[in-house]
Length: 77
Image 1 (tube, one colour):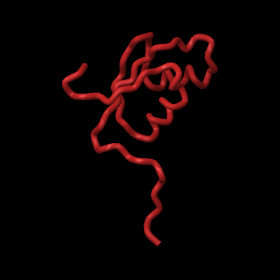
Image 2 (cartoon, rainbow, N blue to C red):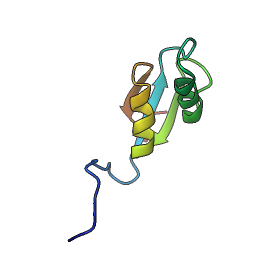
Image 3 (cartoon, rainbow, N blue to C red):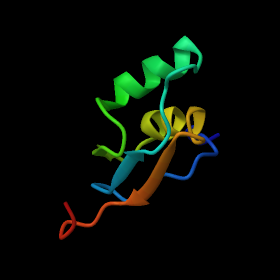
């Protein structure tokens, strides 16, 4: 047998995500607030650039109702 691989599709090496917080974490479960803080958000409408990997994707999936995600291109800030 060959090496085990997860069924997740991996992104190209070096790809990044631009994640914008569009909904407030006020009144949300503590776990969601912790994820918002873990991604580095401090205020609404803030955009953070994070690597595109399964850990970040999982965090984004948990709070998908609060964020907007787009691929990051180098020309964009």
